[in-house]
Image (cartoon, rainbow, N blue to C red; front, top):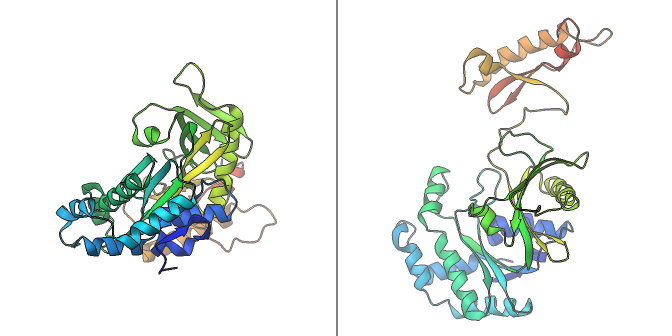
Length: 354
């Protein structure tokens, strides 16, 4: 795969991040899992490396790297691979998106750091959009983001090219509430037309919250005279989001588009990186109490210090164990984000504990 410059998305898998970048790898996984993803291909990181070499990009001189790539005449082999793959899609309008090797990962989403170009049509416009995607690896936002996350300047960039969806509505879907951190909650922002306006904050979107387990729409905030999404579409998006979360192994930030036939298309999915981690060995329908907050101590606790909390937790759990239950082997104290939390569920179930 490393020798190919353009690869169909249907052939990409999670293990191909080095060639396809994070966005391309996630889209390939979604296609393999049967989700509705617009057809497309990835111009691989090998193409970027060759172009950067031709443009004489120096990673130590980020200031002029973008200018060099924007001014570059795309090398013939790369241009041929890109335009032939474009023609194989049937030509017409496409979306051209950056897909960095350090992008859309569990620890660093890079959301909004690199560029996306929509409604690109024709060979010249395609090659120009590709150049600008390459150059966006070196914009100030992306360089600062890599520095903040200690990502070395060896990061490379692939380019995802997909057929445009003639969207009547589009937006973003979170499979966990990004504000409260509540899991198993679908939070959807949607607006008429293309989703970039929602992602960039250029419009105030309709806002929906749904419970994917009960399929109830629990919250609506409508901006126009009529809602952008019907309840049926909200429920469908919530269900799709739950399946994507399962397929990709964690809460997701998903971009979607809806065409004139109410067909939902998934154009991007990345991990939500701002959620506070759940306690280790966390179970559903449990109540966890922050020991750190109760003590007014907010720094991480060392492993040695955590052992003392574990010992205390085992004693507390034994005290409130139900009649006939064996003494708990596991401590009532669990860890999340290097901080201790007490599982107070048995205490709240006990009349005296309440």
